[in-house]
Each structure stands twice: as structure tokens, then as C-alpha cells.
Length: 283
Ligand SMILES: NC(=O)c1ccc[n+]([C@@H]2O[C@H](COP(=O)([O-])OP(=O)(O)OC[C@H]3O[C@@H](n4cnc5c(N)ncnc54)[C@H](O)[C@@H]3O)[C@@H](O)[C@H]2O)c1
Image 1 (tube, rainbow, N blue to C red):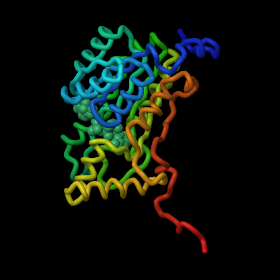
Image 2 (cartoon, helix red, strand yellow):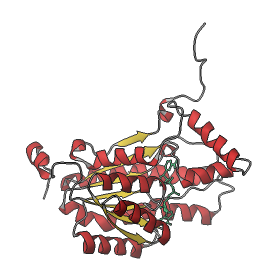
Image 3 (cartoon, protein in one colour):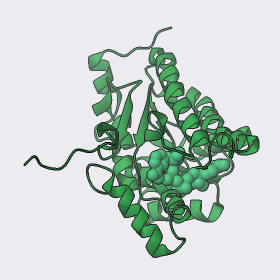
Image 4 (cartoon, rainbow, N blue to C red):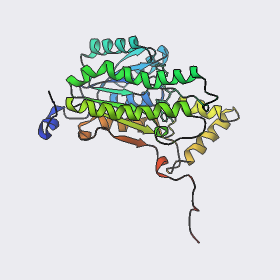
């Protein structure tokens, strides 16, 4: 049966305020963008199931949320394995009793062209970045449907444009954009909205590790690479995890009640600009 909610009903559906009394599952919330997302939702009043790979880092995010008076519970595990998601859902339901939103941020980056990238590396990045997101949605969607909630998938600008030596990564991000589109169409009849966010360069451990790899290996060299990448964005800097979190939070709110199947860029204008630049002023 179709469960599309009409205007008044949709407006009345949620509490006032953005996320108070809602529960969000955030994968990859132990560091970086996922952590920024978790903190943003917690500040808005949501309870947060904090997931990540490393128990100590998961605990750090949970502590940061509880220290500011928020509500959070941590679960660690590999997103490419089904049982991780079963534990996430069981923990969220046991502690909070409901799941309204999923933000799928867990992901990895690898470098290499189609010859250098081994089949094992390709399978691994696909398992984490694509299978991991599919499993997260599949596990949480029965509960999200009950609450007419939302799914937000963290893709990348590299899902629609690319560079040298990112064939594995860019393939997975393109797949996430397509997956999000398909899920948005499937879930619409359950009044569940699904969107995908495409960050540009965001200052996270992943970005810093990449900068180290492409620098002379020193911290100073890596900082210079980060600043160079920042200058390639029209806004002249890299973004911060919370700037992605704010957009995910908006997408989960009733303010975005007619937004689904959208690809939202959070990239400081990166994709708007053609690489071959003209001089800054005409004489
Ligand atoms: N930082 C950027 O510039 C940038 C730009 C575009 C897209 N992204 C995407 O944003 C997402 C988060 O990246 P980030 O920069 O915050 O990276 P990060 O390395 O800081 O965080 C990655 C998170 O994913 C988790 N994770 C990694 N492998 C996992 C696995 N096998 N199982 C479970 N969890 C795993 C880590 O525990 C961590 O919480 C990724 O999907 C990434 O592709 C990042």
C-alpha cells in the first residue's frame, strides 16, 4: 500500500525542532565526516548510534556527545560484514527503541590506475564503500519505514568527475550515486526520503593521510598539499566535517520534506568550475 504523506500530514508528522526525539545511525562516525555528522545531529537533539571500525575512536565520539549532554551509544565492526549491521540495529533498538535516520559515511580511499590497482584492492574498496552502504540500508530500512524517516549516503565529487589514479574509489562513488537514486524511487511509496551528498575536500584523517601520500612525507609538506587542494575549490579552502553534517541534518529534517533522489554537492564550488582557468581580470 502506498504511504505517501500529503502536505499537512507531512508537516505534522515530526516534532517541532529538527531532530529532537529522533534516532540516527551514523556509520563511520568514529572520525572525520561521520563524526561531524554525529555531532551535528546530537546538537539538534537526536540520539546517535555511533559506528566505526576502531573501538577506541568510537568511544571518543560517544564521549564527546555525552559530554555535551547528548545521547549516544557506540558499536564497532566492519561494514562489509552483515553481522556488523545486525549488531548496530539490535543496539539502537535496545537502547533507543526506534531508528529514524541513517547516514552512511564509512568509506576508504585507494589510489592506482586500472593496471596498478589489484583485484584484491578493487574488491576491498567495493566491499567497504558499496556493499557496506547497501548492507547498512538493508538492515535499517524496516525501522526507518515505520517512522517515515530518511537515508543520507556520503558519496563524493568523484562520483561525477574524476582524477588520475582513483579508478577504484571513483567507481564506488559513482555506484553510490546510482544506488541512492534507485533507493529513493523504491522508498518513496513508504514516505522515506533517500539522498546522496557529494563532498569536495573535507579536512579529515582520510584527507590528511592522502595529503601525506602525495607530499614529501613531512607534516609541513602535507599541510601545503591540503592548502593547494583548498585553493582548487572556488571558496579557496577545504571544508570541515561539520559543514557536511549540517547538510545531512537539513536533509533529515522536515525542512527538506520534498527532497529525495537528490545529489547534493558540498564542495565549495569545486564541480562548478572548469579546470582550465581564465585570468582573474580583463585588461
Ligand atoms: N574527506 C574528504 O575529503 C572526502 C571527500 C569526499 C567524500 N568523502 C567520503 O566521506 C566518507 C568519510 O570519509 P572521511 O574523510 O571522514 O574519512 P575518515 O577516514 O576520517 O573516516 C572513515 C570512517 O569510516 C570508518 N571505516 C573505514 N573502513 C571501515 C570498515 N571496513 N568498516 C567499518 N567502518 C570503516 C572508519 O572507522 C571511520 O569512522 C567516506 O565515504 C569518504 O569516501 C570524504
